[in-house]
Length: 290
Image 1 (cartoon, rainbow, N blue to C red):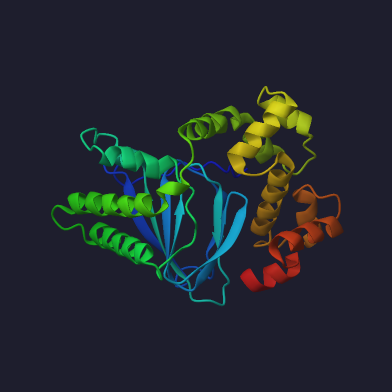
Image 2 (image 1 turned 180 degrees about the horizontal axis):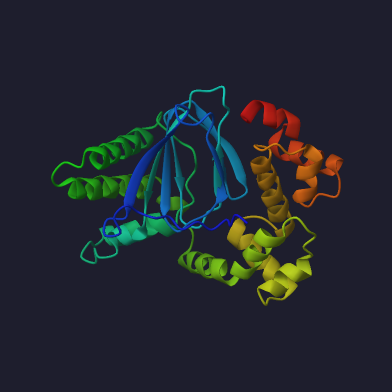
């Protein structure tokens, strides 16, 4: 079964950053399933538009806009096959700056950027801060692509400038330090529940069973789960099933088979839930996106 947690591999463990482009030229449409990872991810919409999900928020990101995804946030991206879409994806690990203990106050601000700010995605190029941030991302991509002598220094410099822009303009949206620590530890506490969902989403999963998997009382479990994912357990399970259904719609399965495999009691209940979530019926979604 596909797990939501993804371990991102880097081409150079000593310099953990990479950039790549997802494009209609190599994919009919961009279809990134819900997942989360520890690295920071930045999306720049070069062409077209994308439907972006981060935790329980779903929004549209358009050409020349940025999306900043913090480590640990559940996210997914998809586009329509009729559109010409290109998205620059930049990923880097917090370890990129782990040895930079001499960077003060820069190091403090980097840590704030990595784990503390709820960014108001998408970030538009129609603002001064958005334009400056996009220029940094383009420059980082160019340095990583051509790898001219000393490119590592320039990459770090542009990342620090990007971080500075983000912290200066959005630092007021940061979460409390205690909340950040709790969020990171909560993900670990709930690991067995996430595994339970991965392996049993086709079946009924009572709230009691989900809480027991993480050795928590139901009230404590409900509080931790909501703080970790931005959703209640019931909302998350439905969200998970709908997104697994999206994946299955890519294959030669009937709507009835998909409904059963994703744990819905009937085709009708599946269609209602899917349409409420995606504003399209499963059949319409299959025709438009696949």
